[in-house]
Image 1 (tube, rainbow, N blue to C red):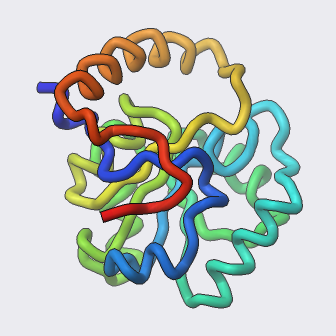
Image 2 (image 1 turned 180 degrees about the vertical axis):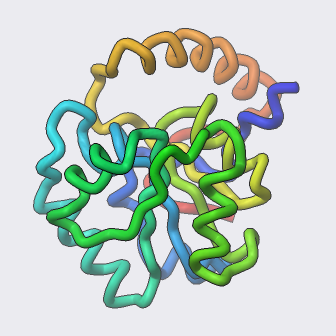
Length: 176
């Protein structure tokens, strides 16, 4: 039952994911959650580190698409400074938004990875869509009220997953 929440990889921050690591895994495009994955949920300005990371992906020819449950107005405003494509109202944990992004990219699921900070939305949606997934630690340690509820349940799911899968540890990069 809990396997639908198991990420392919666990990396401490999205900025530690490099184009070389992605290409070594056969990944041609990266989908990312918005709040607390790409930017802090309560500070949408982003960081210089984010701009550098996005530039690395662009230079390497790896498209980055934001897949968010937020409405289009919120997502468009948050990512306007970065010029990224997005899918809003993705309905995660369902596969809809991720499958839409794969169609938009004209890529099969095995060539795409979803990065997110939540097991119950981002990782479950990735698994439902058949794409690889990367769980990252939240950018900030605070959440909106609705996410706090998920975090309570996620802590229980994570304990179970780690107990059954001792290889589930935080790393600084993607691994085999």
